[in-house]
Amino acid sequence: MKPIRRSRLRRIASPFVAPPVFDFWAQRLHPTWSWERPLARVVDHAPASSNAVTLTLKPNRHWAGAQAGQHVNLTADIDGVRITRSYSLDAPVARDGRISVTVKGVDGGRMSAHLLQAARRGEVFDIGPAFGDLVLPAKVEGAWAFLAAGSGVTPLMALVRQLAGQGMPVPVTLVYWARTRAELCFVEELRALAARYPAFDVRFVLTREAATAADEATGRIDAAPLDALVPDLATRQVYACGPGGFVATATGLVEGRVPLLRTEAFTPPPRPQTDDSGTVEVRLARSGRALQLPRGVALLEALEAEGVKPKSGCRMGICNTCACGKSAGATRDLRTGTASTESASALKLCISSAVSDLVLDL
Image (cartoon, rainbow, N blue to C red):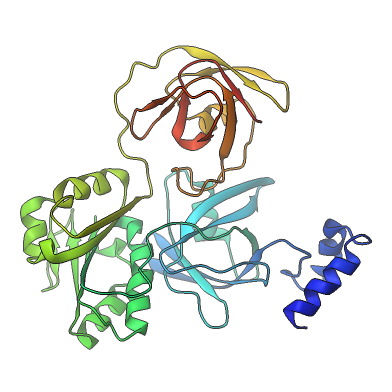
């Protein structure tokens, strides 16, 4: 059925059909049929490294798509609890609509443990709209350097694959840090791309093992090794992705030296030291509850500890899922240490802490 006919049919039927009822019966015929919910079904599950797995998913027609380098939120029911986490696409969306995400295991992470061990073909997730700015311009020009650490390689791999699909039209160097060789993902493919395209170069940097191949090096990100790995760094546009500390170091090394720097951290950078001791009263306007919450702790974390479960996704200030209105009080951005005293404003619960008594739209 053409989209315009489906849309007309939904408008006609909507007064008589409750979407949850439609979903209940439709999903007995096909697991991703839904009146309006974006859903994605696992169609492949394969190991990517010693502690990572690649999931291939087929979203239904309600999902709006994504650009290479963006993230999506996936929601699963795990032991009776709905959990949402953010994952980067590791490749452009395929022609048939399939997407893939490569997920690294996180100590204590219920969602990553489920995806690595329990998720199998046929499982269905809620899938959110794509977000994130680590994407290439419509017209790619000049030389580029991609700096990745750990699972930060995932969105940058999507960009490498996008450029490979275009015949690698510009010079690109990917420098990829990992603790051990066994933790590296995409190694064979990256080496094959480097052999195929003279414009593409890849360097694997190990922090806990010695280099044994020509395209390997050792050590953490540092000015001297970085300049050795990318001698013409000052001429390159740089994208960096990885843990907060890695991204902060990369920013300090290249900011002001290169034509363009864009970064994305999948964990918050170290929090500035502030004297946020004690508790404050946080009133939830919609539910009428009043809670005593600690200063210096992310509001999302503090609310969850009190049994309040706001919507959340990336938990690092990117996806906006936990954005919430504030009608009174002051908060602090845990990434920068900056306080916001504007009474009526919006905040992201995952990266904001209370400075004074608050009223939140929850």
